[in-house]
Length: 134
Image (cartoon, rainbow, N blue to C red; front, top):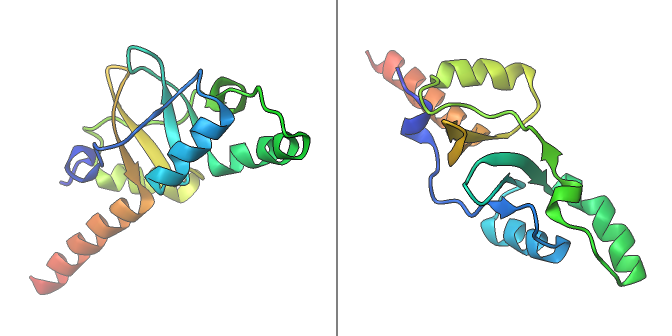
C-alpha cells in the first residue's frame, strides 16, 4: 500500500500569517503552486492561502495603490490536511468528494509536506499499470 509520505513533496516554502499581500503573492508565484499552507513560528498549520483567495484583495489594493492586508486576513483557517500515514487510496477517495487540489501533510500538528492531486493520480496510475502488467 502506498502511503502519502511516499509521494508527498517536502521542499515547500510555507507562508506566515504576518506576511503582506505582495510577499504572499511573490511566494505563490515563485513556488509555481496555486496555494500554500500557512504556519506559525512553531511550524503548526494555521491556514491555507490560494491564488483565488488573493485575487479580490489584489483587485482592491492595486486599484487604490495601497495594501495593509496580511496573510492572516486572507487565508482559509483550519484547512483540510492529511497525515503521512494515510494511504493514497484513502486520499483519492477524499479528493473525489472534496474540492482541495493540494493537501498539507501534518504530523503531530507540524507541517511536514504537501501532496497534490497530480501526485495521487500518478501513484494510482503506476499501481494500475503494475496490475495490468501482472
